[in-house]
Each structure stands twice: as C-alpha cells, then as structure tokens.
Length: 212
Image 1 (cartoon, rainbow, N blue to C red):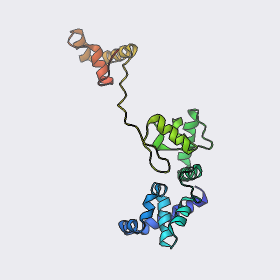
Image 2: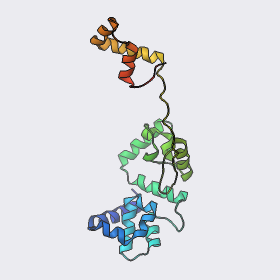
Image 3: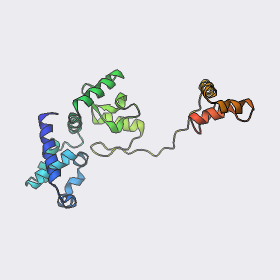
Image 4: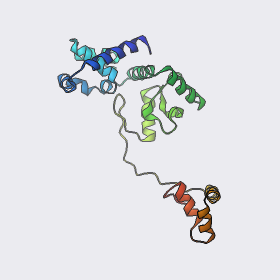
C-alpha cells in the first residue's frame, strides 16, 4: 500500500469509527450520493465526509478524496487511479497469488488491474477481468452482457437464456461405465431391463440435459 493510500485509509477508518449518526450525515451532504465514484469506495466516501466536516466544499472534498483533478469523472485517469488504489489495499500475499495465477494463464498484468466484478468462473485466470481502461471495461460488459453502474455505465440487454448443449455420446459412454462400476443396484436394474442406463447416468451428472 502506498503512503497516500495508507494515509487515506487511516483517515477514512478513523472517520467511520467515530461516526454515530449515519442517517444524519447522509442527509447533511446529499450531493455525495450523486457521485458514483465516491459511493462505490468506502475509503473515498470516508475521506470525503471527513473533509466536508472540516469545512471543505463539495467539489474540493470530492477531488481530494478520489485523488482526481477537475472534470476527471469518467476518464481513464480517474478509473485507473481508483483501481490502483483498490489493488494497493490488497495484502502482498494476495497480490502475488493474483499475478501468479494470471501469468500462469498467459495474461499480461503489467499496466492492468483486476476487477472481480468482470471475472467469470476462472477468477484471476480470466483475461477479461484484467483491464487497463474504461474502454476495456465497456468492451467486456458488451461481450458478456453485464450491467455496470459507477464510473463506467453500461446497460445489459434482456436476452433469453442460452439453450443447453447436448452431451456428446463418448461422454455419455464414459459416465455409464463409471456408474456401472460403482453402483451395484444400478447394474442389477440395467441387467433386468428396468431402466435406461443412458438417461440415468446423464441425469445424475447433468439434470435436464438433452442427449445427442
């Protein structure tokens, strides 16, 4: 964590620890809730409210809290600063694991930041979750039809669920062999012709999945 990030973290932590009336502070500074960059990061918001309580006006408090210049909202610089700050807040062990897994998957992490909200099941190994600009985020949101709100805005389309793919015959055969080898009752039922082996095996592994 950089010295600036550490300082802001301490300021925000101290502010939230001393706060006794959350509802009151929200009503006192309503303009903060129109700034999505402030609201999506508790450190940003804590620093902002600390500065407001110290007598700083909205614009300057937001600039200081988010470490951004005038009219930077929605810019690549604001985005990258925010992502850098979040990653700097991660532990050294976590950062090493993230980079190691990403590089193991062939991902170039230099100049890029990991966004968990963009990742699929691969997590740190997902190339789409490592971004370097707002355009990268928008591209992934379009490709994966994600809904995104904040410094990047993208509306997801309403799409019907994708049809389930049929299981190939060789996979069905493999499932059948495994099932017969481990289930005595199933072997007895198949032997007597009381059940269809293919349907039983497929339903056990992938319920409601069609078979080719």
